[in-house]
Image 1 (cartoon, helix red, strand yellow):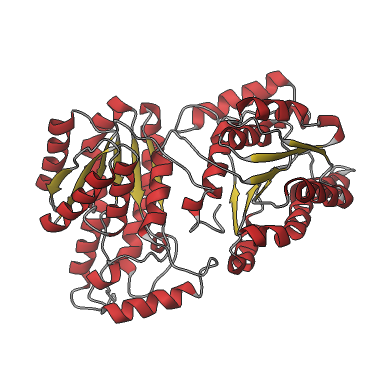
Image 2 (spheres, rainbow, N blue to C red):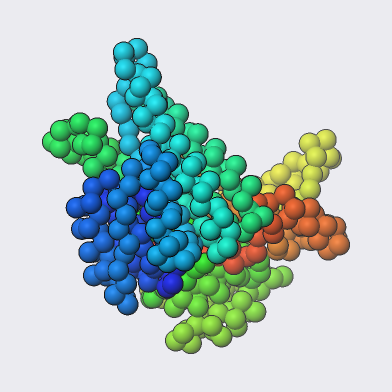
Length: 470
């Protein structure tokens, strides 16, 4: 399954796009119809990437080439000026330029190296964002910041780089809140080991770099390090509005009779997948199946299965009917969930606790358990729309060698019937969502399609380097 994006007419500026992740991102944007600004310090490398962008552009659009050093403010001002002067607008800013320097705190030149690393990885992002906001506000644009796993974990000898990326992560969060009212979305990506020229640029011999990447592969659940294209796809997804294309995939979604599950089923069906929709006896998925049939490009009818996820025999029957009907399973979306208001001193607290665990956790564990044999055959995907991140991390590590990816999505406030089914009145639920919307950077509560699109992205072939994510 793959995802196709359409960025026709969008102007995209990608820093550090003369090589590595930045180059792959520029090429993928060009392939998706965007007008790309390629920039870096080496004109010859920029020209190579621009040539590739022209080659893959559906309409033969030439990229704008700008040689610039992101550590120099005058260069960044010129970069933005040339972009606006040439194209008249800016839709997407990808702050990708970055570099690391091996430095121990007791080294004589430690502070000098610290300032260099901060200048490239943090200061350049802050300044370029600052001078681009006025243009991005006009287009209701996007900012994507490329950080690193080093912003989340400690790496000995890389304290300046770790600090810079950690600060970049917080800058992203602050900008998301500050620029949300201007309808500018701001996101960050924290890659793990990706095969680029990053380590060789720091002076590491190619042979040593290759051995290091091979060693990293042993610790990555999917058995390999990332490639620039893996990150490029994530960047395009975060910048998209967004279109997906799925063909021939068999998708089983629990809790798909309403809410997020129903929206996800419809989105998959619209993208060409064959669906298994399911719900308990009191909420049968007939309406979802009807909508799936209506939007399916080839008029594919969804398989309807009435099942209670808290009953193991129902789960067995659900999987058996799926395999009998379609012969395989490609994607499992564990979406069924429910909440019950309860306090620790309530008389029936433990009974409610057991009910919640049965729906929100036990059902996922058991259904995943009995689906693994089928998903292994198709190198499939598991998406958990839930808050069971501990299980997800374990399953991602255990099933990675079988080429089964496991990810989770933890939505914020999404307008479904969740609160009403938990016992709240519709009026009170509406008041809660109005309050939530006022506190969110994008100025609105989530809708079911927001989550559905994220599910489709995580199950696509382009997201094959994503596993264990939350």
